[in-house]
Length: 75
Image (cartoon, rainbow, N blue to C red; front, side, top):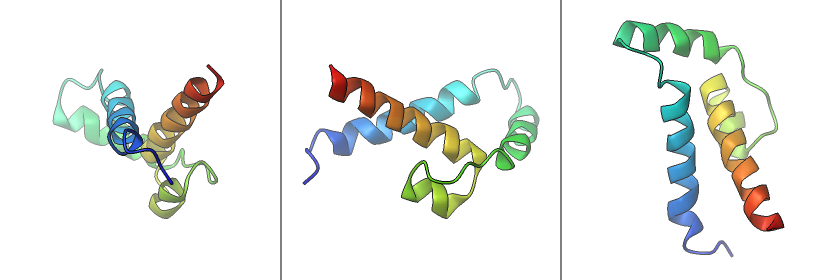
C-alpha cells in the first residue's frame, strides 16, 4: 500500500517538473512551441501514466518523480 504522504508528494514533484521544464517560456506561444517539441520526446516504460499519455513532457515529469523516489528510498 502506498504511504499517504506519497499521495501529495508525487503529484507535487510531477507538477514541479513541468514548472521547471516550461520555466523559460515567456509567452503562451513559446510554451506551445516547446510543448510541440517535447511531444516527440516520449520514452516508453517510465510509468504507466507516461505510457498512456505518450507525451514527452509527461516523460520528463514522470522520470523526475521516479528519480526523486529512488533518491529518497536510498537515503
